[in-house]
Image (cartoon, rainbow, N blue to C red; front, side, top):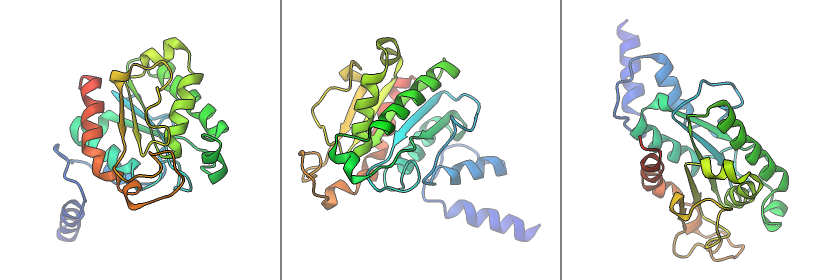
Length: 220
């Protein structure tokens, strides 16, 4: 018993982010750890509906279906504000290839993202759907939004894009007040370029502001 208690304490104090709610079960501990992973499949795995559902598209050549550098810190910050059990995350599985980026965003991935948004809206009518992406994932967000019906676009709670290759462009017919774009000074991708400089690689720093935006619009 003493060993188990000490191990649990070590686990808690070494977590990178402190959540403002009691972690009183192994299930919650596992969920906190899961949000740091590069693959998230709450929607496709049949996880019960949550107040917020994030559909996230990773950047070119990123790991899993949400990557590691931007998506997970964003999800963790949302969970800090809402509670760990009030968030569902679904990554967009697509090739995330360089040709896809050069072509304006992978077409199959864009279609997949649109279908995931509609799936969330249909299966969880009370959830607040967030469309989000990093780099090429931002291209997918715009492409997917244009594939949605006007009714579905109106139901999207918010949109967040990090390192946006199409900075300044509308996101389908989704109201500008629901859209937040994060582009750093010196990010060549946001300037319409092809070069990856350090400003394009540290969007985890914007995770708290992005989460606050999402939770605010969700009314939670």
